[in-house]
Amino acid sequence: MLSRPWVVGPISELTRAIHVQGQFAGATVTIVSIGPNARVLAKDKAASSDTRLALTPGEVLHHDDLLVAMQELGLDASPQPAAGMPLAVPVERGPSVPSDLGYVSFVSNLWECGRYVWLKGGVPGAECTVSMGGATIGSDTFFESEGARLALSQPLEKTTVSAQQLVPMLA
Image (tube, rainbow, N blue to C red):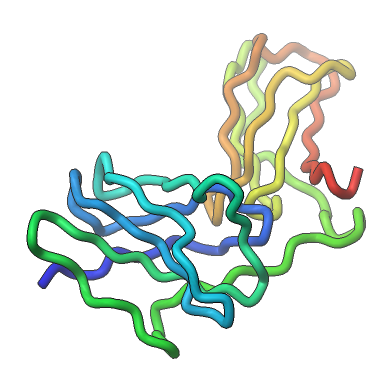
């Protein structure tokens, strides 16, 4: 029997791709909700033991979902999930008003000529942007505890650089 991969959190209702670890490369990974609305959320072949699976088209996460991952490789499979599993990852509520968003911060140093930045403090699944002199020079999605790592469209200059997180439904 294969071991069960684990879902990496935190995860919010805004999350559209779920980070899983511990599966075999080439295994088919299935992510399910064992919450009140039990269902399959994502299923795909894993490229590596650390990967992200996009949610099935049309599927969204709800704050009462509890997420569990399973894997199948050939005729072998990890155990099926059971209610009350201690390794299930809960889904956090998404922001409902702009004041729920808070501020993001730069983890990386802002070096002149820098082409990449690392941000923390965002809601998992929220979009973030980096602006320089009022123009957007990078955008990405916040992921779990990793934050967001952005490639910039131009090198940083000696001017004001800012970052923010955005949720379209609150704009």
